[in-house]
Image (tube, rainbow, N blue to C red; front, side):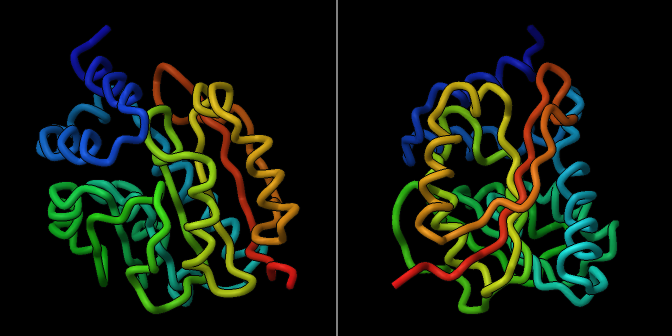
Length: 218
């Protein structure tokens, strides 16, 4: 196993502990892009391609007219891919301040916020609602629980779309399937498309999920 692969794997054992994750990514931030590049991390490119499909097929608008939130933006790899695809109105948040500082240097984002923990209930850090949220590399072992989807939904405008990646190991090692079925039954989100076993990183593929925000029943 390479050093970069070992570093990535180490994050999978942090059990969603906020303080451990913050320290881990603070220490890793300066090396992150090089490490994931060595491991052929294609998740950002895949999710940006799906964002274009959602823009064309569901929202019916050009990418530049769509308000996008990059949730768990890290160093900005997904934001850069979105920009290349024609998206312009992009905001981002992450748990790690150090990762956000690097993302800010890309020049992609209008606004960025750190210290956003999708494992706890907290008011949205941005007042605006988004047409589209992309969330790549967040639903990974040791990071965010499946109920984080509900917290992401609070950032969407009614009728907005959420695209989420789950590493195959996360899908198989958590209750993601039953948890998302419950979230759908509550009327918070509706699954509209799934891309199974797609490209993500050299050692492992991922599933990608597209949800539409529905009105929660009274």
